[in-house]
Image 1 (spheres, rainbow, N blue to C red):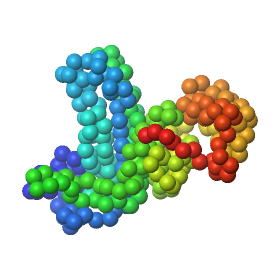
Image 2 (tube, rainbow, N blue to C red):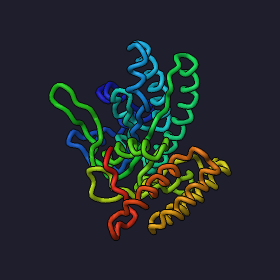
Image 3 (tube, helix red, strand yellow):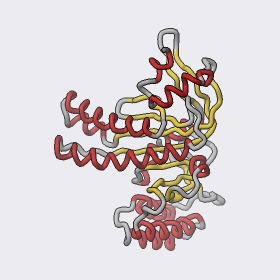
Image 4 (cartoon, rainbow, N blue to C red):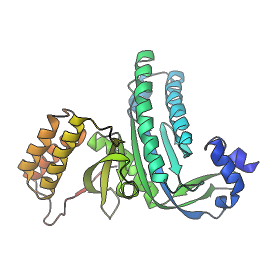
Length: 292
């Protein structure tokens, strides 16, 4: 009864049944798990909150969150929490899943496809401009019940959880929709098209990580995007070698295939900046992000 009450709204019925059969996974002291965490944020929510009356705004957000929740549960994820217009979801806890990274990425792509439909409907109904940013990271984390005597919740904590949150925000700099960390990319095989974006040191972090854009399922990439990716890959190599003008040329060629490609536009601006103010010697191609 406790498991049903605590988890029925956050995981699928199949997962609830699994937890009832293996309730030792919900140890009060917590346990170390290998899992994948997804953070999603509705872009432009602050602007929308100034445009619409509270009842309309709540209706818009609830419509989005309802669709997102159904997709997370469909892929055996857990809705960890809603934070205003943001969502945190987990795969691999409390129900163990060896393919947690795959499930999280599959859900992310489906969510973005559904958001296109929801955005079109909402645009016609209220005039709202809707879009979502998603960050996913995988790794070892602590899962357990956290809180006080009056209220607690089952959740996950750890550095890899924090990184997932930062990746969601990093989408703003590259104008991407889904960004995953190198830990998640390493767990995937050839099921998805990934574009290596950058090597960065996230704000507040000492160790650099490699960022990837999760674009689509394998075999679904358009020819234009594939050619743009090739130009970006070549430009990224030139950029890491400090060949700013040549890198700009390659990134600009990418724009001839996808004129508004965010990563190409971002790297062109960075190369222009570095051509005037060169990074420190032996920088190793790692970019220090100064904001979240």
